[in-house]
Image (cartoon, one colour):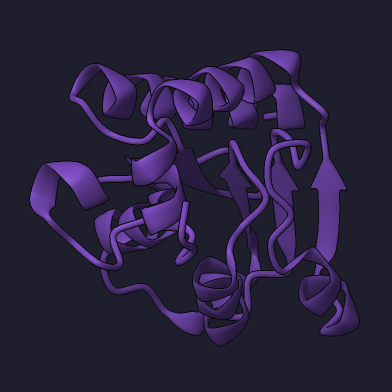
Length: 150
């Protein structure tokens, strides 16, 4: 599976989240041989959660895995991972993070790189357009999601 295919799975999750009234951020955890072990989308609005970002949902849906599974996987996410999601990737030893875009938000990319994680930005225009439209329509929800005042 190439990076575009991995991102397409995360983008589909983002669209599912948006259709359910949530923030359009999706993620997928995929092994080197192309097995999707977990995917999910931001569900903070839908579940009233403080922490259920897309990457966290993908990890949750992956279930318990041996350490080598995480180290051999790539986290695909439609948006630059926030500090919380960055920390989760580091905690589980995920060595590669591929994001759709960082034009609407820049998260912990530098920390990931400093800790030896390969970070790839696909600069996907569909991911960015989805986020820009959401931020314009729901700024209060967006700023709450990233822990800022609107």
